[in-house]
Image (cartoon, rainbow, N blue to C red; front, side):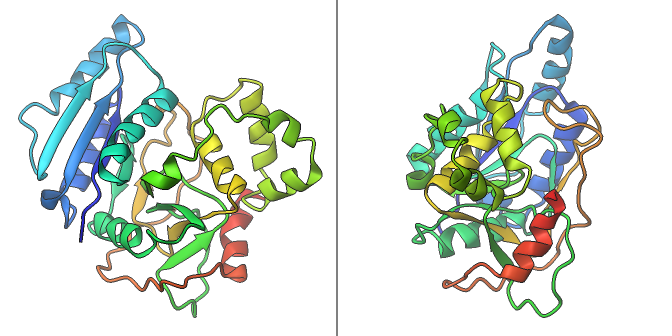
Length: 281
């Protein structure tokens, strides 16, 4: 298996970063994987202390096949950092697994993600995959370990170069398309909250790279892959993050299985889709 490189974005949360690194380094495929770390610069002098504490954790850092670090002097913000960092690595390696500094991963997270990226590389109707699934109750007789949904996720996710390069980060014509009922309905297929979020993005009230990325899925009528059981827990929902507040909701424990049923001909399951996306109603 050609293992995808891991791209990790860190900033100013030393304890969250420590736990993220600890779990990632314990992954079954960690020592065979390349890790690219992008550290954003401080916003001010007070911020610089915490930024320095995060960066200190990478001194003599090991546990992976190769570790490359990029420490920014300026503060780019998460959206610019992610777009630039992912673009750089995926352009060279063709596929990528992306992590942020508040995600604890299960022991077989990298196993799951690499299997998904291998199995569905030739499915042009699939644009991304995630190790996180939204809170829901699985149907007991669902036979597979992966879901194909109409919504993407930015928590422990991966993609391929040819899909990533199709993203329109400026969302050209999005405001006009929002006036089209058919387009608004296409957005709602990924969750009833999406049209309102897009309006906020267009008004400059939220700074998110994840929304244009999801809209890229919509534009190409593409889906995203999710695990039936979580490979990721977000530990940043304590108000310390840039985008998530303590009011955000997380989901259960981590899946410990090492083998996954991933049919090449996977299609969306209407009942499982309803179960997952009802979280956004």
